[in-house]
Image (cartoon, rainbow, N blue to C red; front, side, top):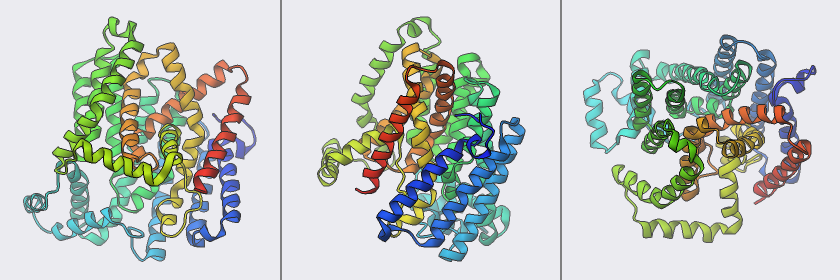
Length: 454
């Protein structure tokens, strides 16, 4: 899990996974040549992976300052390269068929030289709700600062780089609540070099800004376990509230994490923590759909329970039991990568699939960490598990577990708990550890084969 070999390729966390990935791409490419994406897309992806490996070699367990600098340079280099690729290959800075990003760009372009009051009136007139406004404001203010949409669309890249670097720093601080400095640096670096964050920045989506605030909120929520002060309470609630500007459901999930860390301060709750976790799960399963319906009403497109169950039944009928099984497994260790996607999907799935490929590999240690947390009652992790669990449940119920975009808010938790789980794995050296790990790799490979050939 950690750099522990003198050979430069193996000392990189990404090195071994990259070898697996290249073999998988070659295997699927040979077997399904008709699905091979156009060569520029393919080589752009391979080049990005080599850049990840190079930076992981340069990083090599340095201080947090060096780590954040490496993340900043990596993000800046790769997002600029992908933006240039978008210009040359798609003739659009926002890439192929940008959809949401095109809407953000259009609105900001219309109001770049007009007042914020007029902009708000326009948003009201087209029923843009609060959790769709956060990134609209960011794009508009960026364009105003740049002086024109042409410069603003590129300045927004730089702000994305800053957002990822800031979230990486707070990832380090969050990780320091659980692991030593070396492993916290490692978690920071892994999070800061995800190719999905590069893609998100280059195509003008909101995820990097949204998750930056989520990571900061999670840090202050977790810090309450060690220091339950008025300052930390205010900061935790303040940053949790920013989720209202991006995705309403995340605000409620963060508040549940805040209430959980408050509850576990009481010795009685800690003594019977397993009982309360099970009770909380039962209540969650019972009320989650109702809560989802209330959120949809707030957003103005309510869906009743009967209609919801009809939609789910339709998905089950169209996809079959295999897809239902993949939905559950992907929730735990996914999303699974589309290694060689066909047609248009090659641009928005295959291009960043190395991120989801890596996540499926280090999810082994994440699952192990879940086991240890429950077995040993590591209460400090409970607020993070609440956030992860509620987010995952929503994805399962809506069949969105295969989408990186919807996994993204809880990926920092998976990275952190994977690093902690890996540290525990190396320390405890469980019986038949190598056999278990190799069995997971074989099972994972079979799942990826079935998924990519479905």
